[in-house]
Image (cartoon, rainbow, N blue to C red; front, side):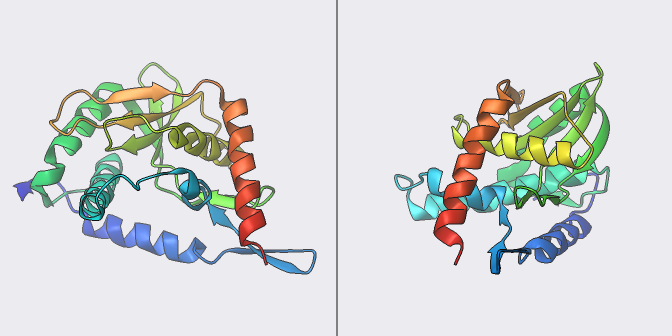
Length: 210
């Protein structure tokens, strides 16, 4: 474990509490109970990890969660006690991007809801960049781009818009495991991406609504 300048405990607690309050959200429609699905749940069937050994997948999931928590702590400008060795490069990569790009942080891992389309989600960040644009950022630890990411960002973009924070851009930020420059990929065709996201939402609803 490496020493750092700030603590993770309060952030972990806050994030889990936010998840607990929305985990069982429901919407009554035409005499039925419809569960409000999360962006992650909606896109899960389209994320294929079958070729990755379970132990490797589990380790990557644990590391990814830890990196997200630490990055959220940094964005909130809270203190950290330690950074696990396996996370250090990713965190350094995020830190370098944060110092280079971010002027102000507008939202960090906050649960947002769209009652019209009946779903919810938790964007990693919405920031004001030093050049003035409002950017929705989804932190990623995998090196390769994944197709579902652009639909995930489209779902988050709509949530931000519905909650009064319309970004100028949205994209995935791939953090470098060795601490190098993070790679930002912007998704420009947000309307088409959101229409695809809504198709996934409708399929989720069809197969999961009783």
